[in-house]
Image (spheres, rainbow, N blue to C red):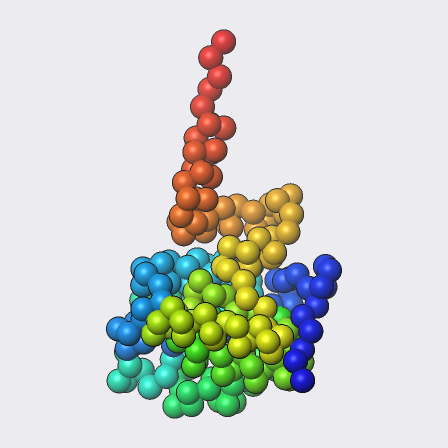
Amino acid sequence: MNKTPKIGLEGLLRPENSIVVLIDHQPYQMTNLNSHEPTMIINNTVGLAKAAKAFNVPTILTTVIEERGGYIFKSIQDVFPDQKPINRTFINTWEDPNVTDIVKESGRKQLIIAGLWTEVCVAMPAIQAVSEDYDVFVVTDACGSVSKEAHDMAIRRMVQAGIVPINWMAVAAEWQRDWARMETATKLSEVILEHGGGSGIALAWELQLLATPVSE
């Protein structure tokens, strides 16, 4: 039975109830990624990772057979330099208790997933987790597939199962919720400046204008 996503304030992400799982952002998967421009996927995933760190949201890094598929991208590892990715043999991350035990022990029910490829290593755990009473969010612009069709069909399939598609900046905005929360507003602004594309450029311009003396 499909799960109906929550609506209203309860349907929005909260840092204290969120946990992020980044799946298989590795060289092998990137070699046949054709749904997106690869540098955008890397940028967006790093932006998501840095936002999670800014809001103290637990983030699990996991790879599949890294000795053959390659280590997780350095720019992601650099966000969590002391964290060793969980190296799996399971294609479906949700079948590996080394991952699921951490999620369960956290007590957090808003599960945020991003990975390569969308139709395999993202869809499998997302569909399984949503049946276990997690509110599952898939960060579509930090995922990618072997083709645009494969990515799009995977998102459609997951939506039918009650999974919520979202992009990384929307995740960060829901975590922030109020710019008066200065303890995280400054950290989030730094992430947007580095990874927010046009939004980062606009923010830099705004900061420039605010710092420019007004001529009398």
